[in-house]
Amino acid sequence: MAVCVESSARLHLGFYNFFEDGVAYGGLGVAIEVPRVRIRVERGVGFTVTSRVEGLELSDVVSRVREGLAVSGVSVTVEEAFPRHAGLGSTTQLALSIGYGISRLLNLGYSVRELAALLGRGRDSGVGVAAFEYGGFIVDGGRVVSGRVEPPKTARDIPEIIFRSSLPSDWYFIVITPHGVRGLDEVRERSAMDYPQPLPRDLQYELYKLLLLHIIPSVIRGDAEVFGRAVTRLQVVVGSYFSKFQGGVYCCREVEEIVRGMLEAGAYGAGQSSWGPTAYGITRGRDSAARILQKTLDRLERYGVECSYYIARARVGGASVEVC
Picture 1 (cartoon, rainbow, N blue to C red):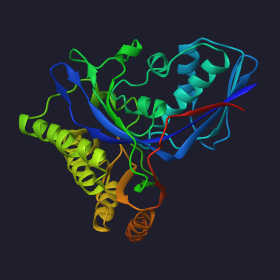
Picture 2: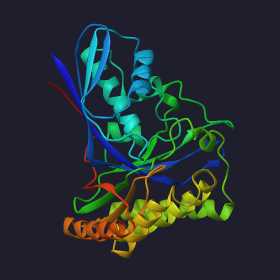
Picture 3: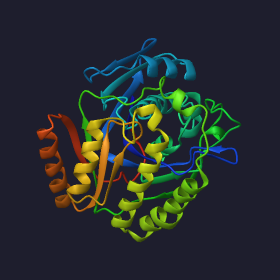
């Protein structure tokens, strides 16, 4: 018997809170249909992990799973995956997919949140964990901390979901990742994330207003234009907060050109996912998404920027698990 787990990327749309009243990093994001992770887990000798994805670095993920679960007699095959440190949440999806597959195969009974704590996921944001478990659009409540953000010790330390919803089926995300650029890895991001600092009151109020008066209501109403405008503004505030770590509102010139290109081509909103270098645009209808993508690719070609790209809708549910 083998267990197969399939999950997909998430876009991290930013934070609406940085540090207020002992709560750090309330965030929002969305699980998207592609790109995907697919893992096959079966009985084996020792603990082995094989990747069919060329160039995929897994040693740290494998070490964390082996240490966290303390199991043997397992063989894991990574059949499909997307690049790490690109702003798409690959590390969380790989770790949870492998861990959940092992838990199901060996009847360990772990919940997704318990696994996340064991594997060190959800330290700064609960969006990736919730994307794996539920899919859709997610807002989390942040981490309760006393100064320094520490790794989660139990499932209670993983940020709780305070709002989750599917998105209309005609909402599309144009997802573009420039080649040759990497976002901050998990070592370098600690200098940016371990000691959260509060925003000036006017900016913090603006983030709360964007989330509560525009982003969540626009999801409920199905208003992609208001959603896009509000997310774009939220991204600028968040990018300004992190600018001293990433060199500007965006991680690099390539992302700045992608965001500008998508907005000029008619996207309702655009921004950088997590630390980048993946950028995204928001529109309604696949034809509109294809048109915006092509105009943006034409722009990038003039600048000599090579990239990978997708057109994706929000993933309706969480990871799929099946006997295979």
